[in-house]
Image (cartoon, rainbow, N blue to C red; front, top):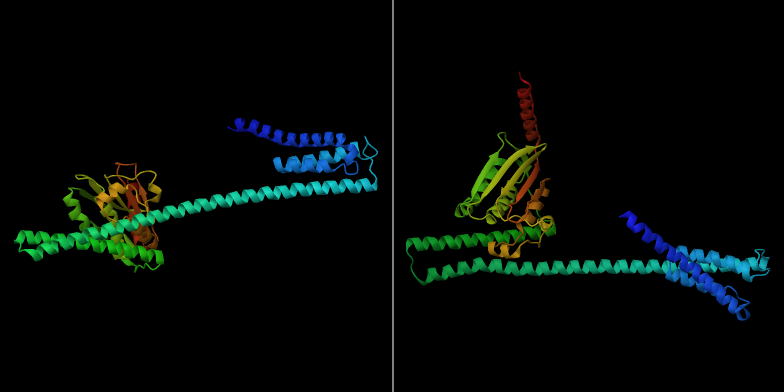
Length: 383
């Protein structure tokens, strides 16, 4: 690649410097032709040559034109001609010419830098404007989705309420009506909670109340919450926990929210008959919780943006599944507030997804990890 570009660069440089030499040659010929009119000022056309070179070529070419012009003027047009012996007056005149030519080169170089800076600022402003317009469109789409998602469960609740008022139902129908009302009321409550959490995150008011906790009960509580949805789709949830207790400093309510969001997404985007695997293990000084599903997967282009607010992947699929798409942004914020990290991995669409949460262990957890490592090493060294 370098061998291809180098000749092109040399040709460009040769053309630029050749332009300067040519401009000086033209100035010399014109000065010869017009000598009877411009004899008192032989530098005029050479200054024009320097100015044109500075405008059309780079600064180096204009400096070359300046040096050549000074030589040509001294040698051909300042007595004694065909020599470089200068009187004091002619030396002053030549020095003034060189200074003026250098000033012309400097001014034109400054002009070019100003034009380049202006173009760079315009490009940056246009990019910022496009990004702002994209963000505004995303927010508008999000507000439309919020309206739809809040209206849908409300319509179900109002519809079943009207049915209950209009006629008496048998026990089975009454139980079904109450179950639907409760399910949609819970769904609307969750939507509002997500919106409130997003608002708290934006305002920097989201808080956690960390205490020393063991992670297994928190994860199990989240699994119990999503179990009915998984059963309805015949999705199996496989659990693999390490044997020793894994303790961290964390807010159990907020961590359960994190695990519930990840499990809920896994169940939501996994087709019927699929599976979700939950693993808890130690990784150095971290507790590592992994949620892996056999679902829709994540497009490679969208994967870097999966935890951003107002960014969603396949809108058509999301509209079928419901939800606002705020859960992962909330997960990311809550995990970071616990001093941990979360990442998403996927081999592509329809290849499943894996979310990995890392949380720092407490001192007790680290001591337990070291004890396990010591026992394992002793067992491996035993005869």
